[in-house]
Length: 307
Ligand code: NAP
Image (cartoon, rainbow, N blue to C red):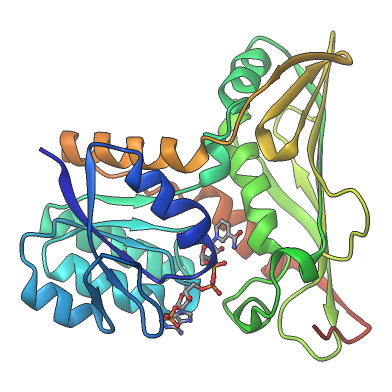
């Protein structure tokens, strides 16, 4: 029988990805939504999470598709009510919040899943296996997009906790932390902040790799024309390029695979598995790199940003 689920935050990603992925998966039944201003045709809607938790004890799982700043309070309430919780990325606005949620889920004996949708892109497992058999020399993340196009009017990304360009950048870091056979850590960073904003519009990160590889990332929200979501990899005997955010893989210039967009259907399949196994998946390694970049980054002030 399908597991009953409520979706919280009926905004861009809920409509673009969550609702289609839930609807297509027979393991899940979308029983209710929680959103202060929006609803979904034919689905009972609530404006407050607590009312839903009180009135619908039959709904076992709460999926949170809201921005990171309010997420902790929603997740905490759902966990305390004994529900499984699925967190959009990034899993919170601070690491301490995430550790607290992980402990609370353990205490309550329920599942918590910190989702990293880009890890579930089609070519990420192929690249991980390819890299496991090779010696890394260089890894370069180039994640450049037009914020006006992808985040129109989203003020929360420019507020503390919204992470600015790390909102998409953390997707690249989630792939990097998945495919590298060992951990790296941020050595130094430069973050450019628009004069009128609290979060960065661009970032350059350099990592220390224990095996000596040259590992770096550039994130920029001012990209015009073609958009770039690439990871370039050089090894001692071959080179790879993962592009289109993880759905296209080339090795030494030859196309290996160009998949379709299955990230969110894969996420809901994984959540179903975690609930069935009564376990959790709360890997925070991509978020640790972002927090370290904020801690170590040199701040440069740049032109104001206006939508
Ligand atoms: P969004 O459309 O700006 O916000 C989603 C919904 O959250 C809003 O419609 C709003 O619904 C609710 N919300 C906003 N602020 C809130 C607050 N302070 N308290 C409670 N609810 C609030 O954002 P989004 O683009 O869907 O992103 C949501 C999350 O998904 C983010 O963490 C983002 O990183 C992640 N994500 C986004 C994308 C993308 O392409 N946009 C892709 C992957 C992941 P109500 O006003 O109706 O309550």
